[in-house]
Amino acid sequence: MVGGGADAFIGGVHRIASRIDGHYDLVAGALSSTPEKARESAAALGLDPERSYDSFDAMAEAEAARPDGIEAVSIVTPNHVHYRAAQAFLSRGIHVICDKPLTATFDDAEAMERAVRDSDALFVLTHNYTGYPMVRQARAMVEDGQIGTIRVVQVEYPQDWMTSSVENEGVKQAEWRTDPERAGAGGAIGDIGTHAYNLAGFVTGLTGAELAADLSSFGAGRKLDDNAHILLRYEGGARGMLWCSQVAPGCENGLRLRVYGDRGGLEWAQEDPNYLWFTPHGEPTRRITRNGAGATDPSTSVSRIPPGHPEGYLEGFANIYTEAAAAIRAVQDGQSREAAMGKLPGIAAGMEGMAFIRACVTSARDNAAWVAI
Image 1 (cartoon, rainbow, N blue to C red):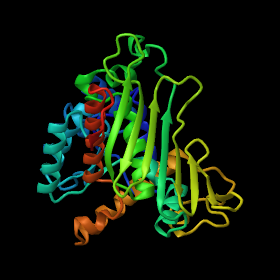
Image 2 (cartoon, rainbow, N blue to C red):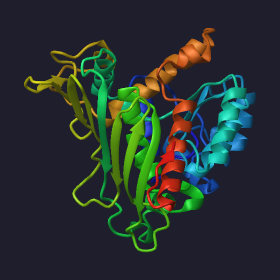
Image 3 (cartoon, rainbow, N blue to C red):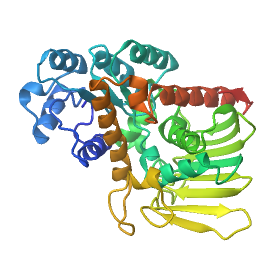
């Protein structure tokens, strides 16, 4: 693991997710940009001191030279480190599992795309919300034509944790997310807007064509957006709306998706993820439960326990890690990278997210003008 040391929320999430199905052992790390903190974090996690590194470059070089070196690396740093860290491992044939968004800048994103293309290793982007069983169920129902031709997509991701200026109160996770040098051009749109945009595309299969974005920075002196209202035009004629916010009091992690076609509609909410609501046009709304009646293989195959027992965020995240492990093994057995990846989010999903951020920023600068994605 690169990053994810003491006090890093997302590092702990990745470690739990990787362990749930027993496919990974954490054996090496460059867990902080501060060497002392990196060593302290490694000791707390029980790593061999010889495999605790002061930099990702040293880690990549040393691990690639070991006969028992790592097969994959998880990169959970702030955005501006993603490309340099990933390139160090990809160039040595080590598989990369990387947090989103892809990078801080579009130039780095294009460099990352080249690095992935030039490597024999896999690159997996952790758009973890696509791992929820009922998200897989929704995607399958769309593919099966159960809601017909899609007309309207509504997706939102509101939070409230940055309602006050917590970046000035020692909250590390807010400090780097509000810093353009580390986060990139997008604030809320990069942090959670890319998740919402990716989820809508994953479920519907639609490709964004144009958007018009109104970005706001309500936090005093905040350089990046903390609230966004975005209109979307999809290829094929469907229309969409995306709202993401980090300044919506009462909202915690309110990721929600609604999809409406000419035959019916679907609705799913991340804070109650074990249920998918399906309304065939002209008929009563139906509740499909995770691993319950009406659930089919795309969702039941990634569900671990009987219906009524809650599965949530960590289990959905674990599905991405488990599928990444299967893809790595498939490549090791001689399968092509493209076939092994299947529907896993990879470099293409990362570039789509970066194009979304760039289009949002461009549109907002021109008073919410329509911009090609």
